[in-house]
Image: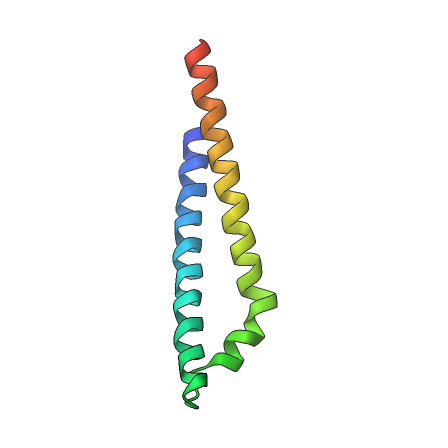
Amino acid sequence: MKDRLLDGLNTALMFNLFFVLFCFVWFAVALIGRSTHVDLGFDLWYSLWDPLIMPAIGILMAGAIVSGVSSWVGKKFLRDS
């Protein structure tokens, strides 16, 4: 049960990572477009920053910490047993 839960968490974190990377690439391309006066969605990206992108980054960071701590605790208890 625990392994299945951790596998699900890792899968969700992987999808979240790809979403955050996609948002970063979108930001970079839109910023280049804005500097050349071509509309590539910077205003849309900026409007999604607070309600969508920032929480995705926070979930990714928190999930990575939880995953790392649970892995460390699991290895610690397996080694001591």
